[in-house]
Length: 104
Image (cartoon, rainbow, N blue to C red):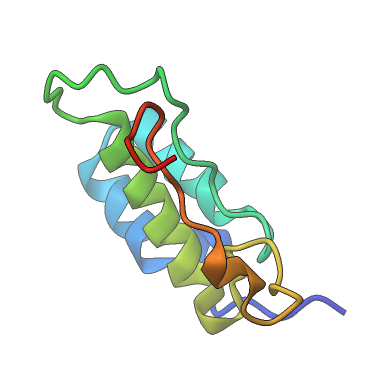
């Protein structure tokens, strides 16, 4: 049985504020983010989607807003990591290394 959300998508406080202050398109995008399931957060932008030239708004900022709306609706029952890690500390030993780094 799926957990119960704290709000319906239309009653999420950020969505209500967005209807008054943002364009209709952006309000619909935030509503769509709020409609996602508790274990399905909005996906982060891909590697080539941010141009790095300080656009206003940046796709990363838009994603953070959508993630905040999703978290606001689901509260503490939201699952962002796609489930729990099994195997204890095995995940802690894996360290991401930058390609071309000197740590071979």
